[in-house]
Figure 1 (spheres, rainbow, N blue to C red):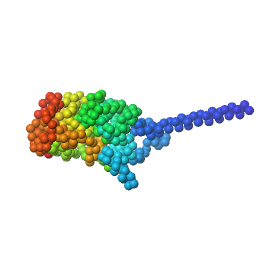
Figure 2 (cartoon, helix red, strand yellow):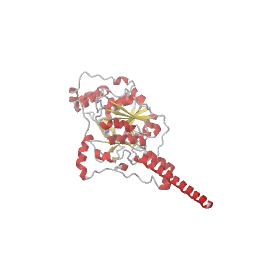
Figure 3 (cartoon, protein in one colour):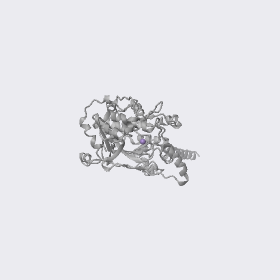
Figure 4 (cartoon, rainbow, N blue to C red):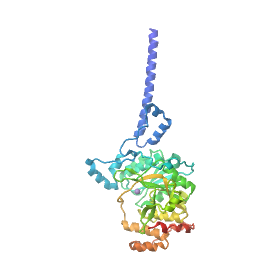
Length: 432
Ligand SMILES: [Mn+2]
């Protein structure tokens, strides 16, 4: 009898121990999947960690499959015919396919689109870190969040100081408290600055820069997706030359399908005599300078302006932006002329790639009218930076003089002390 009792007790112990083991394993698995189902969790890093450890992968074969949701790996999203009417209505809100965007994960995966030579480059451990500054005005939730998550997921943590969102007086309710609650749970400090009234890109960026703590400022639009290895080569060029102002290659995220489409590394920024920014083929002179190595950074006359990094101290040394510019437009050429004439250089770093939703129409309101705003901004640029070339611009654009309020004053160029006559020689060859 006593023998049976002892044996019974042993069985119980074995059953109990086995149950505890299974119970713990269950909890472990549930927690693992719960975290990845949660949109705020950094699942890409999580998968990477798992791969490093190799434990789950070896036992259960996890991590082998690429995600298969809509738009994963940068694929196009097609809306079924039955939804077409609603899709068209939603398109008008942001001037891109909002329905497609909302279907795509905020953590969507992208292919590694870098050229082969870029993948093997290694970068010295830099002391530089960056604040990423993102200005938005009535941006869609899904595009804004995908921008933020792509920065967090694909930036080495030690290089990313913080993300600063600057809200240029948006009217959409979800960009208020709900956004503030959401960003509290992210693994990188994210702050929101609110402009009291609509100011436009320049003054909003200046507000973000003012409160930033990183050594480098990285400006991004609010509808971008950063790809693997986007940040390291940008900071590397600034480490080598603190006056280098660097842009990634801007890939295209289709406004119709949100497909990720690679852009060319053979174009650079220029402008025409209406002072519109334009892309042109890279000159043979620049190809020769780089020894035909397309993975080396390329010196560009002007930049598109939406996406770039600049050393914070250098940004203020050259007088930052012209704070007299309203809303949007012209500030990219102004900054380009400023940098070349203040001893810096602008480069497209061809190993860094960031996608951007290009739109056919602007979704923004333009208080006071588009023409007046663009002409004012452009006139400020030509008056400060173009010397006698400005007469050429005024001949081509007589309207510009008529629509500008007088008098107007510009103080920003006073900050630029460096003699740069040799850089001015660069101007005539880059214009149409
Ligand atoms: Mn944009």
